Amino acid sequence: MWLPNRATTPPLHVPHERNTANMSVDDALADDTMFIGTVYRGLWIYHKPPRTLAREVGHKNSRSITTFVWAIRYLCGEVPESRLHPLPREYAASFLRRTIDTSLDMRLVEECWQLLSRLTGEEPPHQEPGVYVYSYPTYIGAGDVQRDMKMKIGASTSMLRRLETQRRHTEVPEDLVVLRIYPCPDPFDAESHIHAILTLCGKHVESLTGGTEWYETSLVAVDAICRAMGMEPSPDAT
Image (tube, rainbow, N blue to C red; front, side):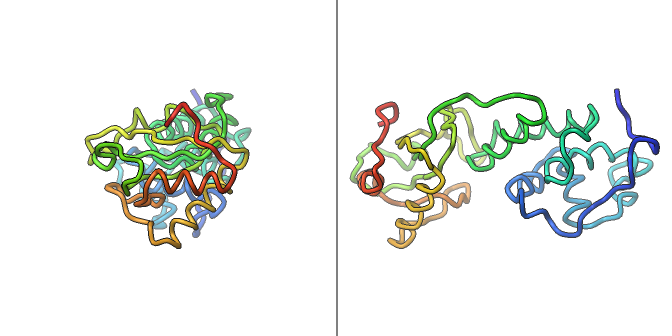
């Protein structure tokens, strides 16, 4: 097992500004409840000296948190995977898998899959790219497609059909239900246009979990917007 030491580990480099190239991963690190999140918040957000943070978490010196720093530097795009030793690789991969399994943000999930693939060679399930719509049973009610309801509209380049059906937020005791999937070659561009139209119509709302892609509209309206853009709903989710 590789352990940090002066011969293999250069001095810690902690940026004073958060990396804008991987902001969604940065946000996930800032919210992470495991030790890697503690290290990220302490060094990258609160700018604590490494020795101070080490003492606060009960470690004797900053060398004890160096492996986490290297893992974070990879996740933030500062160092390539080729420079990671086994232990930082393990910490970074563990964070990525945990985020993939729990995040409701498909852009973040896509980004984490890219990082994980480079790090371990693991690949996401290959499926058709497209825009998806889903919601909670509380919002769906009787399922009237003409009735306005709160729904999340997102995009994915691999669709990940399992999506959120196995994911729960602890504060919402319901599984999310996929309502529509609109296959298309450029899902993020299509998603942006749909969001813009619905926002202009005053349909943007906050969800139970405070997400940013939630709208209060009807499936009929979303179908009409997507058809105007040349997208038909997949029969797998209608």
